[in-house]
Length: 287
Image (cartoon, rainbow, N blue to C red):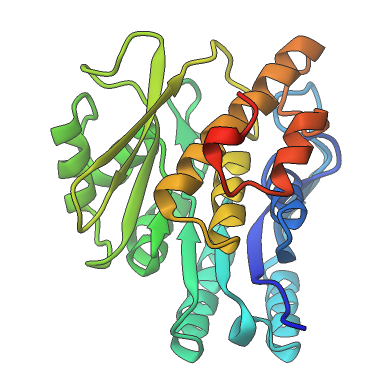
């Protein structure tokens, strides 16, 4: 029997709530993928609460976890590496070394880089040294990158107001020639009112994917969105279909969170969980 695709997911973990691996692992597993989750930080909750416990992984401890992944042969058989929030520049450097060696040993590996570093409201919420490591070391190795407009603007130095701005920003990054950049949560000058867009840029013509804009911003939204994209890619879906499925499912999770009065993403809604089991047809997903 053939084993399911393996994803090595390297990002944050929280005790309470759904951000980082605590948001992304569940949809990937529900879609039938095998996931090896490596925490970059372990916190009690997101920083939105009055107190925050836990800490970033000490570099020596994190290096030991990566050493264990090598000892178990995970990079050699992985289909994907997904990276997200990083808690220290030392860990960022270790992730870059890990991805570089993994791609050298396993050329078929797809590296998905979600440069989690800031947003329009809070601004940059990681040290500039970490953001620079994402720009200079991680993004150049990415096969797929999923920045939001704030992150893309910071990384490129390019204001984002139009599709041409997005293209200029993507061109300013040191992306591989065949890499795809998914600009998430875009509200451009010509975006239809009441909508936001995910826009895929790469070697081909831009592909624009509008979706109704829910008037809510919850921690974990981007982590969930990228996790669902990887889940769908692992099921053999195209990138376009994966983005559209991720938009629908993320919107459903957000809507459910709003109805519950939750302050962050919720993954318990029945139809959301049901759709993860067979996400191949975005048109049939609950809207």
